[in-house]
Image (tube, helix red, strand yellow):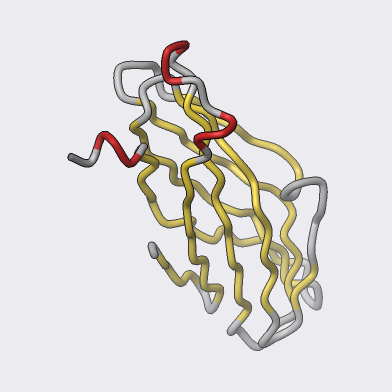
Length: 128
């Protein structure tokens, strides 16, 4: 599981290929990813924005940016974890994602970025 820690905030990613929602004949491959964000800092923080870079073999790099994650802007006290599940579709069945979260330390209003580790999305039959 790819994991990275930035300024006391640890992000871990787990991925799954979803064959029931995919259609390889139409070059449509769907993946789910679970993100665990753990606040090991001494500050209460709030996730404000996400910024993703999605690479799909043989296609143009996509960028996705927006407020919060899956419609939420979670607040994490020291020691708390926030988990969410989202998804991504690819045309090739092989790709990577990486990105950042914009966080705020609530006591000071200071903003900082947290890295999301790069992770691979690959259909199981491409691994052979």
